[in-house]
Image (cartoon, rainbow, N blue to C red; front, side):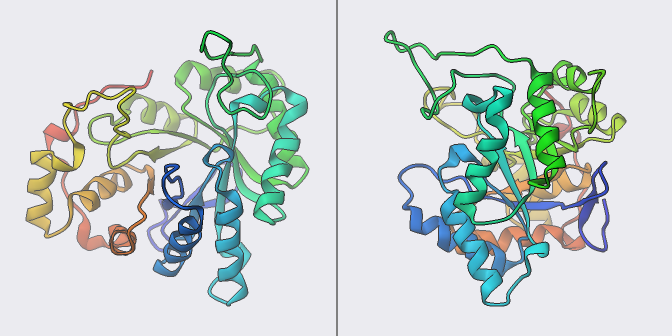
Length: 303
């Protein structure tokens, strides 16, 4: 980590801000609200903006970025923008056109980071989650190394400055790293990571390979009724986290975010509340530094 500029060096020579703004919004959030909150995030100091094809908001995020460039708040080179290749575009011949489609929506010339969203291929097409007549998800068979080679071509074409993966475990990362034709290593691996799922072993592995770990869902997993027991503990109500927050006169969210930064993990913060967006920026202050108690060091590893 570079404490002076609050960014981390990537293995391809580029730099990433250690704190990012997650732009995902559930369907009930109006699209114009995405424009508003992305502008607020940039005004608050966020320079790392994370989005994806799947989020269906790249037009709005791009509009927000361009408007802040137009009013002189930032330059394009100040913004670190991340997009993601969705699973229905994993066949090698579909990878670059998918990125070009995102760039067209964004009205930008390049993305700073392009990543493979999940290590699983779905049936090609415009439907994000294709299903058969029985309601079962329709998968596809594509070699991860072939997808990665297509990602490398996007970097060579200047459409993406850096390339990486997301939601990969160690074995899947090793498939890419051990590919005889490897040209560029993934610069990062973005995974769910928080005190209840701290990814210690995966973090150690990534560090050993000069791959940055990026934490999504850093304030706790999305509590969707389809896959999360609604009676399970809520991270931001955790007694240890709340005790630390009280001790340091900060919010539990700030403690959870700072926990990641002090471990050398880049962290994404997501909110649609102006006060929370501005509050989250305070995590970069040294005054938020803390000792992580043993209770928060236990882990369930993504391996």
